[in-house]
Length: 608
Image 1 (tube, one colour):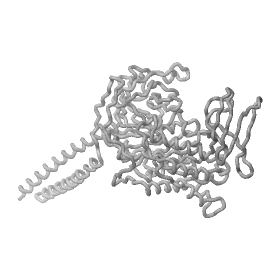
Image 2 (cartoon, rainbow, N blue to C red; image 1 turned 180 degrees about the vertical axis):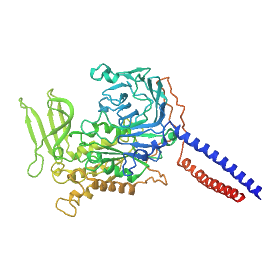
Image 3 (cartoon, one colour; image 1 turned 90 degrees about the horizontal axis):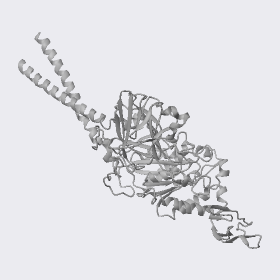
Image 4 (cartoon, rainbow, N blue to C red; image 1 turned 120 degrees about the horizontal axis):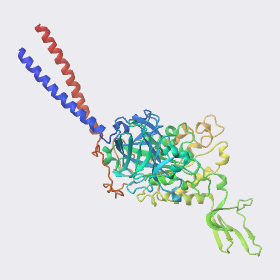
């Protein structure tokens, strides 16, 4: 009996040993796979790694396995190996990444993309390198490589060759090396210190006195360094995904893209924290991980081009097109509803003393009944210089330029101008020269009421609201109209129960509570009229593009850098869950081992 027990225990211990070794090997394989997935800690791609606050969307995980950033963050790279790393990457707007940084990112090498202040004026994007504590750009790429596509996923590689006291940094896109060229700033006495110990060979940065070979922190910084002509939008976005997820992120059916076009209200002014309490932030959280909501709000901007700040001259306008949205929530109009724009008549063309075309204001008087007054002015030779005629709501303006050319224009009021220009504006999201794949559907999100002192300036919101309703009925690309004006009409300046300060602190911009109510109104419209994707079922939502494998890029350089740690296998949540049964088995085995040891001790004591 004793020998049988010993034999059984021997078999059991042998089985335990084999299973333990097998499980240990599997754990090491899994760990090795995680570490070797581009040399990046898998936690890097999780929101919790950067920002434990679930209410904040400055870092947000999407259903395709990617993580997007709309604010700057610094964190340790974890498994990051100093010889380099690879990651899937895309950007909407400018960005900077600081590599080999110390904990506060005051040291390190900076790689960024320079966004011009105005693409429509011939600006372009270029990559650059600088020091984290430097004052100037060290080098840049003369032109953007064709194998980089703005707003599309690319494989970004950063590699360090450390030799004695020298470090060489090589940056690749889709395995093709970028070539950098030193800037003229190296001759600037004020910037000379930035170039000490730095040179460029074969397009690579070489530092003969590097900061450190052991720093492992990285800083991500989404921003426009070109910016807007006035108030910059800080809600730009950059995205990362593991190279293991390359197949998943390149599909169209995981994430629906929504661009929210607007002014300071969209940007989040008035809320306690724009990345938490703005209506766009609320909308992102309400819609969930199957939606990428891009905040394209720009303060003080308008639809009409004769205003202080037309939206169509801003970088964010072009970024919103290159974002390739499936849907556009069009929320511009508040700044158009000012009496200084609304009460004037306009035409687009030359003036009496100029042949250049632009928006012109013509002051036309009204009589006591509100009808336009016809007027004629004469030149020195008694010929007609200008003539205003009115028939019903049509006002015609005639004049001669200095060269004697005659011109006749039908003058337009703010409502007509808003509708005409908004139609032209909206059509760019279904066809434009910046994005051949444009296909967006438009939802108009209307203006709101204003109160207090702000109502004295932004005093034509009702008229702007009516213009938006007419706009929604005139364009086939517009699939919905969201009435925000009605939800604010109940607030006034005399009511205690519904005083406007419950919605807005300044009478113009919603406060955090107002932003939440606005988000709920927009979400309810979307939920009622469109099929939403959920975490359980991915439903058809909007126009589908033809799914195909990405075409291979034409290399502009013969030098291709390969990382030994590349792994492009698709991983899923099921792969991660498969480790759970093994863990349970391991716990059971551990319990059995402890019982066996106790049983052996018991038999020895009994024998003694």
